[in-house]
Length: 94
Image 1: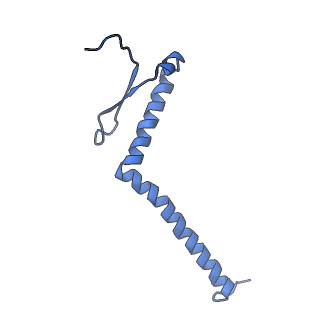
Image 2 (image 1 turned 120 degrees about the horizontal axis):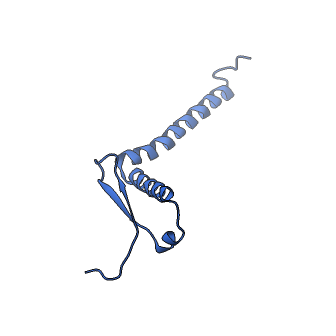
Image 3 (image 1 turned 60 degrees about the horizontal axis):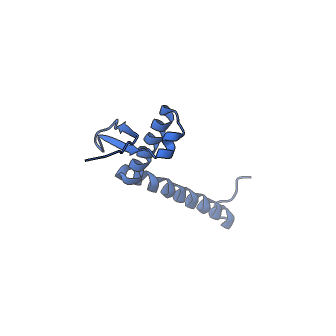
């Protein structure tokens, strides 16, 4: 039994039901007092849901690992080429 409780909620339907059917957000009372535009509240809820999926899903974890790995490999490759030119193994063409 619930007495005297009134809450505003935002329900975000999932475009891909593989992960979840819907996300339910309970708005703070302060947020309701600000009278934020409905589109802005819905957009923020979708951003939070997307960020959560990227943080917790296997695909999101692979994305986070992929960027530093490629950066490290590229940096190592550039450093190796500079070292080869500096030691004279490959003379500069000019």
